[in-house]
Length: 115
Length: 114
Image 1 (cartoon, rainbow over the protein chains, first blue to last red):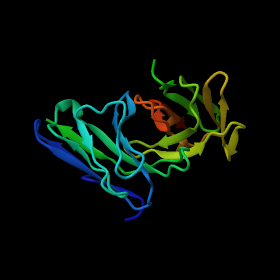
Image 2 (image 1 turned 60 degrees about the vertical axis):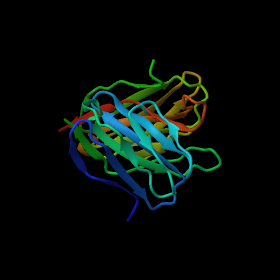
Image 3 (image 1 turned 135 degrees about the vertical axis):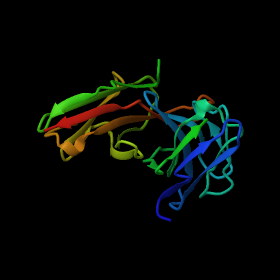
């Protein structure tokens, strides 16, 4: 693995189904993020984690949950998908140093369609 | 009011033109500022950080104006390959009071034509 990867690349999902989007990084970054990107709305933060074992809510957390059991992985779960969750989802990581915010590295994205 | 605002454009310019984008932010305690570039259906990638004293990288110049709470990006001698969406990013506070949460603007679309 080089950088940050996401899986699946794309997915079509029936409403009401549970779905987990995977994100893995090999840069040993302490911070990780999940965004959704919708036309005209830009990137909106769903959840973030500043270090393994901690998570926080972003701008649009409802309907999503995350966990950060280790440094490398940051899965995003939709417990019961709804059509409004149709979007492109980007995972990102960065190296927070002494509280300063550094460059984010993004995964290639997951295109999710909920029918 | 959204924390970070950008003119969505599109800015449609000929090759060789100079074009400038502004981005305003509402959180006066913001500490870090960046410009990212995003190509169609791709992930955002860092273009440049924005420092208090301003900084330049080839044809690109970034400026920060803390008093008026905006950052700018100037692109000189535009190339066809500069066509993309440019996102400004400001690190601010989360709703829970935590710090260093990055907030993205909605992006400014640039189209450079022959």
